[in-house]
Structures are given as structure tokens and as C-alpha cells.
Amino acid sequence: MSENKTGKPAYQTGRYLKYAFGEIVLVVIGILIALQINNWNENRKTDIITQSYYAQILFDLDKETKNIEERVLFLDSSITSIENYFGIMMRPNLETTQILDELLKVKVTFQLLSFNANTVGTLESTGDIKLLPEKIRNALIELKREQDLISSRAKIVYDNYLNGYEKADQLGFRRIQYSNPSVKDLDIEKNIPEIILTLEGAISLKNYSDKNIRNHFKEMLQDIRNIKQLILNEINKK
Image 1 (cartoon, helix red, strand yellow):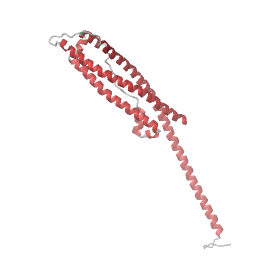
Image 2 (cartoon, one colour; image 1 turned 180 degrees about the vertical axis):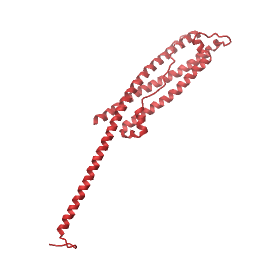
Image 3 (tube, one colour; image 1 turned 120 degrees about the horizontal axis):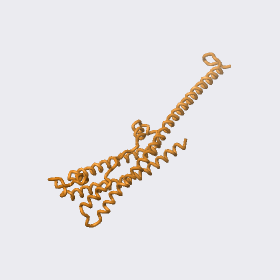
Image 4 (cartoon, helix red, strand yellow; image 1 turned 90 degrees about the vertical axis):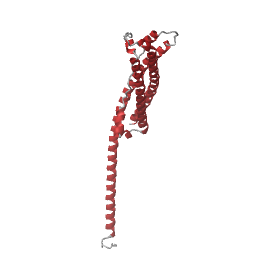
């Protein structure tokens, strides 16, 4: 039997090396299993968080749908009111008193725009939006961007619209509304043509903006339906 330089039989050294190698393999396998379990746990936690976000987003989108549908109905009513007025203005030989009477029938109220983007805002601020698939993530970001853009544009238009009514009030329109135009030394009657033109300019601006917003709302409703379907597809994969 041969011996190595230490005087130990060679087969004992071989057995030792095999044993040591086996120990290393077991350690490596143990580490890999531990890493796999850890990754599985992390993926499971991420999946639970993502599913929770999906539920919140779907809830927000349902509220948003109802919000937009109600706003579309409001805009329909406002647009109809203004277009009825301009339809009547096509009649020849109308007196200023008739025009003022019709102006008083116009629906002058408007709604400041607001949207239900709480969950998306939270996702963006925390960075958790990266947990969502790219297609859903981009669609949500684009929806929020469109909502912010419409809100900012509408505010500018409605501010100008209110300025028109404020100018008309300064010319005496509020007194005309309350059937008291004849006040000594005010001579409001001479302002009536300017009042009419000022108000027509204001409601024309509002009508154009309302139609534009309504069109955006209808496109937005379709975008929301598409996003909801994308999310439901992801949920159904689980």
C-alpha cells in the first residue's frame, strides 16, 4: 500500500477529500435553497402588495367613472342651454329686452374639475409604481397627466369666463337681473348693448371649453375601461 509524504495511506486522503467535497456541496445546496426560499418569500410579499394596489386602483377607477359620467351629464345640460340661446339669437329683429331675457335663462354655473388619483399619487411618491407591469404603469401615468392637463386648462377658461360676468356686473347686469336697472344717475340702459356682447363672449368661451372637456371625458372613460381590463388580466393570471 502506498503512502503519501505524511506517512498516511493514500486512500484515507482520498476519503477525506471526498467527504470535504460532499460537505461543501451540501453547504452550497443549503445556501441556494435558503436563497430560493428568501426569493419566494420576497416575491410573495411583492405579489400581495401589488394585488392590494390593484384593488385600490380598481376602486379609484370605478369612482372616477361615476365622477366623469356625472360631469358629462352636467356639461350636456350646460351646452344645450347655451346653444339654445344662440339658436334664438338667429331670429331677426330681437329687442334688447328679449335678448336679456334669454341670457337670464342660460345655465351659467360650472364645475371645477377634480379627479380620484389618490392611489396613483401614492404609488408615484413611494416609488411603488415600479411594481406594476410597464403597460399598466404607463397607462395610469398618462391618465393622470391628461387629468392634470384638462384641469389646468379648464381653470384658465373658467377664470376668463368669470371675468366676463364680473365686467357685465360692473356695467349693471346684476341690477337688470333683479329688475332694477333704473337708478338715478347710473344710466344703466346705455350699457345694455355692451352687457349683451360681454356676456355672449363669456358664454361662447365657456361653451367651446365645455365641448372640449366633454370630448376628453369620453376618451378618458374608454382609457379607464382599457386600464381596468389590463389589471383584471393580471389578476386572473394568479
